[in-house]
Image 1 (cartoon, chains in turn red, brown):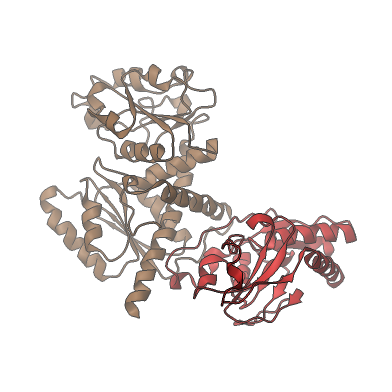
Image 2: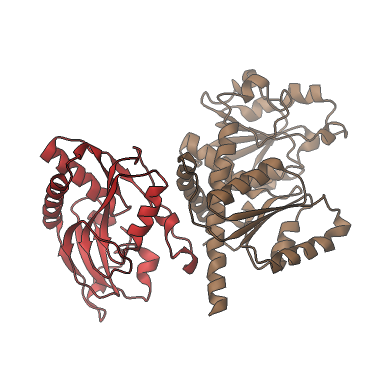
Amino acid sequence: MQNVSQHPQGSSDTAAGPDRIVLDDTAIRRALVRIAHEIVERNEALDALYLVAIPNGGVPLARQLAANVHEISGLDLPVGVLDTTLYRDDLSLRGERPPLRVTEMPSAVDDRIVVLVDDVANTGRTIRAAMDALMDFGRPRAVQVVALVDRGHRELPIRIDYVGKNIPTQVRELVVLRGRDGTLDPPLEVRVQTSRVEGVHGAQGRGDG
Amino acid sequence: MIGRDLLGIEDLDRAEIERILETAQRMQEVGLREIKRVPTLRGRTIVNLFFESSTRTRTSFEIAGKRLSADVINFTAESSSLSKSESILDTARTLDAMAPDAVIVRHKVAGVPKRIADVLECPVINAGDGAHEHPTQALLDLLTVLEEKQRIDGLTVVIVGDILHSRVARSNIYGFLKLGAEVRVAGPPTLLPPGIETLGVKAYTSLREAIDGADVVMALRIQSERLSNAYVPSVREYSALWGLDRAKMRFAKEDAIVMHPGPINRGVEIAHDLADRRPSVILDQVRNGVALRMAVLYLLTGRASASAVESTR
């Protein structure tokens, strides 16, 4: 996803419409503090919590959430990374295979309360894929979902438990999390971009699921 | 980015090789899970079409396909002679009518996978053809070296043994050169093809000189018919001059690794005590073979489905 915005500067205010920043670094930090409090409030069995990031955008968010939960409760939650690519439901519709991302699941998921962390929720298809992947690692006690941004164009009966911000968007717009110089290092920001090429979101990033 | 078929490393560029290796590195994680299966190729059919017996490679492809949830059909034929090559294409056409999503071909005659690929709609993967190429073996060797050394660029790789008849050697020469390694080949003069240097390798008829300062030493399997066919005076002499052991490995770098595509002739190509533990990485090669073949199946079947979608529009 960090590659999404690597078009030349200045091309953003063409007829396709300007990019807009909908969350800046401060707003993202504030949202992650609030979500961390909500996670701690909602779950009595704090020691069963397991944060599982959906790469790439979910990874820095899950790490920050873990740090925030530590600040609030003193607990060190395990943080896993779960790539959903091999579980996607659109693989047979696409030509070129999407690149695989890293999966690192340091703890077993059996009987854990798994909190999936994604940057942008939209159709619900990525969360569906993540849940299928998760079940291959064991039987969690419960699964909850964090999304920094919820676009709301749901195509599956998926509920987001913790939302940073609801952002109404056009279907053809892109919502991307990015950091400094095209990485996911802070300062982070969330941008809404108008897709310039039909189907560009499929080719570039996954902030659309 | 990657072509329809995988017939040889010679056809690939550096970026394509790196993409396959990176995909394979991600696939390795699936093999560490308790449930070693992902649903990616559910409902897809992969055919192992082996005209030459090979339990190891066939099994590796079979496991790779099954870990991606594909249905894997094994079609093993008796070795066919060149004169029967017409029937090979008939076999291919028959298979094609069953609409497989990928066909893996091994044949003792060079070029047969290419001829089958010309007939089939689906991607064809060469699992070894004569003395031509064995691309997935070279890719899994690259993956294993990358895992050990974190790079290929600038390494010195020595391939020892029957270079003349070895498709593993050819594929590895292409692969390691394309990724920036220095490649040396070493073996009895009768088993070094004349003009091999034109590929960009250095040829040695002294194992000690070849091994000097090496990061990777790869022994090739010597077929028993070569030993009895005047290429080599005797097994004992071959083993004494070209068999790897700890004494000879002292001339390599201290952290050099030993590889072999298998199956090993123990005590001939590699001494017993060298084959079974470090610096030997032979079992890592086998393990990496599954992940590498998963990567190849994943990448190639994507392209096939794209054309299938287009043709139904």
